[in-house]
Length: 89
Image 1 (cartoon, helix red, strand yellow):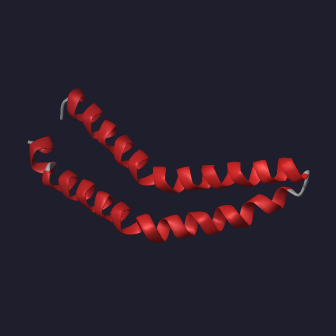
Image 2: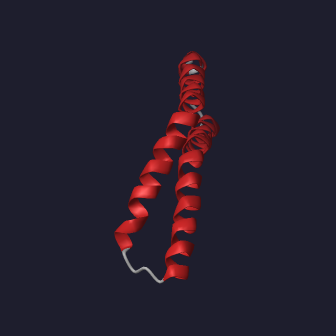
C-alpha cells in the first residue's frame, strides 16, 4: 500500500465524518445561538437552560437526517471493503 493510498483513505474518512456530523453539529450550534441570544436579551443567567433545547433539536435532527447519515456510512464502508483487493495487492 502506497503512501498516496493511505492519505486518500484518511482524506475520505475525514470527509465522510464531517458530512455525517455536520447536520447534528449545525443544528446544535444554531439552537445554542438562539438560546444564548434569548438569554442575553432577557438577562437570564441559568446555564443549564441551553441543554434541553439543544438535546431536543439534535434528536429531531437525528430523526430527520438519520437515514441519510446511515446511507453515507454504508456507502463509505462498502467502497472501503470493495477497495481492499486493490489496496493489498
